[in-house]
Image 1 (cartoon, rainbow, N blue to C red):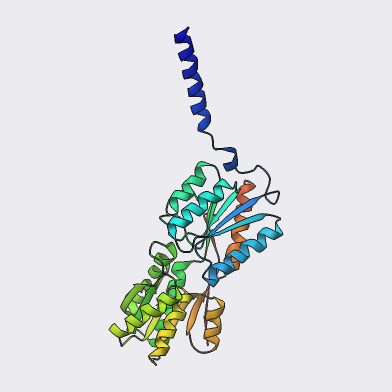
Image 2: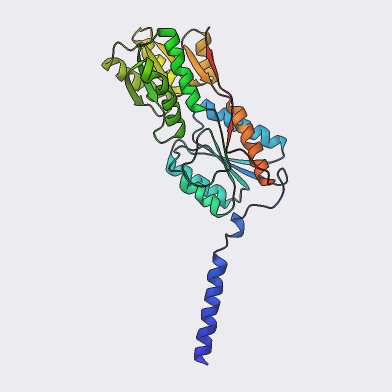
Length: 305
């Protein structure tokens, strides 16, 4: 009798173990069609940057048109916080995740967590190095870097001495914009200094001050985003130098600065369109439609000319 009881208990535990392999109910995406009680989880790298605020606005506008709910979380440029944020969104039972990674490598674990539960993932502006992503909605960052380099050559000629302010290390946009810029600069310009300023305006100012002290002959600056470009311009203004400054994004402050004759140019993205297209891609995935691996959003170089 005792042996029979032990055997029954063992079978029961095996049964429980098998059941535990299934995701809990709260983590299972709903089976409703897009627009029908669909909940979108949006994880943004930082809402302290106007570009990403505009991108969030695009997501919310398109979601409202489709009668979808959006839950937004701000990673504050902290990769560890973003992973926790995404895990929280998963626990809230979102149907699709839209992620704008702070760090393309670090976010991979969160993407893989979503994959294991069957929650589709769409990335915005920056990619994830690992895990299954339905699509990346982004500008062609490498092409944009080339546009910035070509503009500097057109304005100053070959051999001009240039400084480069790089974005967050590990972000795909940093790598791609830098690669595009160097496609031009390594052949036609003289890059005398480059350093990260983490896509931040204050860091852009401080880093540019240090660059100017060590390289007084700098003629131009390419910043991987407008926030750093605006910070760099402040540093340049304080020393009374005439230096060409090119940013990337096309945010309102940068466009106003160009109109005022301060910043020289920016490679303008369409952040709201990125957000809208990401929602549409998420809807397509939920409805079982195929989406392209990458959804490109056009760029335009804006200058005072």
